[in-house]
Length: 323
Image 1 (cartoon, rainbow, N blue to C red):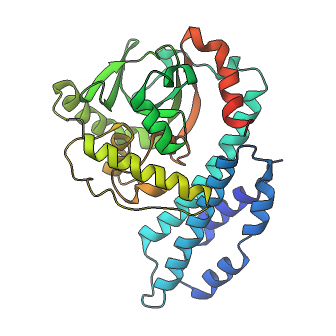
Image 2 (cartoon, rainbow, N blue to C red; image 1 turned 60 degrees about the vertical axis):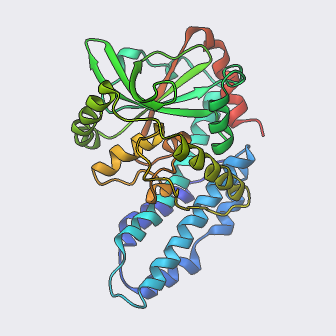
């Protein structure tokens, strides 16, 4: 059964940990309940999800140790390191909350989970979950599936919604780079809708409008090499997560012109001064599923193609209840 230990830790770290007192950091590291959390997380049925939470906790502790080490030479905390430490802990908390929420959905009524298309707002992030049937015929989606260990293989952002005419902005091979696509899931595709807070949405909108101009002009290419390297790094990141060790390394082709799907979301948030996920400390790394666990996005519901409505419960069961 889910406990409140992670929730309490995140609240404590957020409100009380911004201090340059070395003794407080020593105490925090010495008393961090890592073994207790590991034992409490046994309720998480899927091994990789449990290990990814533990990996995030290790990332948090590793960064806290860097902060403590830095205080030997400086009287002030490195703000980027503090933000990184918070992100790792917040990601672990978001992961646990998400698994708990979807575990309940997997065995219950899904009618209140579905959203109508007209509810989409500019700034919403749309994550594309692919069913097993869809993945069998889509090699690129399989690559992303392998690189992230997740069937969430694409990310889009709502660019506009004028009287129900919804435009999604996406960066992919199907659009030959950055382009505009229809706001309707294909057969075998489920949209997971994530929203920023109203304040963050307001800040994002001018940047989304600027990228939309580029998308409609087809002026941002598809960065094939950057994508392939991100996938390779993703595979090693997944393997290290099974060993409960965080891996954050640079993509050597992050300067290649163009963006891929989740990189676009990363860029939008960085333009307003927000690092959306721990691995986003470097550019051109983030996978679509990491947006699902970002503390800056709130899950709202799903949009399902009618032919897949009956499959939804089984897909959720396989993802959150079956190892």
